[in-house]
Length: 158
Image 1: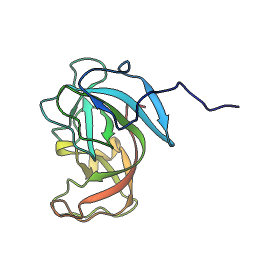
Image 2: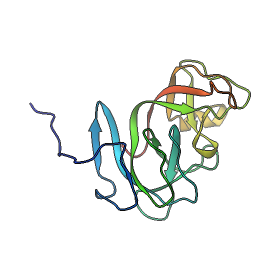
Image 3: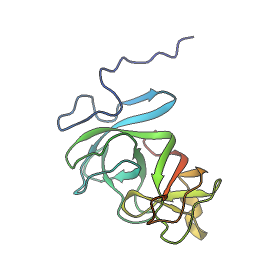
Image 4: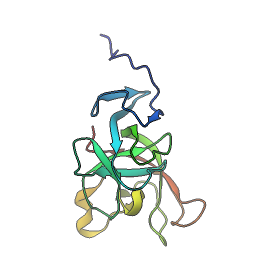
């Protein structure tokens, strides 16, 4: 049995203004899953931020603007993505993300959803149906230098 897939001639950290792969192409790299996306939003997508479908076209995304709004697709793991650029969005695996909770720390094991400006927020009440991942390494409350948590997640891009 061979797990070898297609040969890619670029790294999953590649960001480009011209598409080098067909949008929606999926790949596995180091046990992490990725999909090739286009940043159709009016804001850059920084590392550790989640993105949602933009409704412009298939596999076009934007950094999320509201908590639990839109279909969470992927996290920008390796390099900041400028508006109008193409990139590999991570759709499944472990990744360091930004804690959107201004006064609440993220403890290990708690469920999270994509939140404001691509950060991640704790789920409460009705939001638990939208769980996107679980914290595996705790983070301090948002707005501090320690506001990053490691999560394991699955996005709709998988």
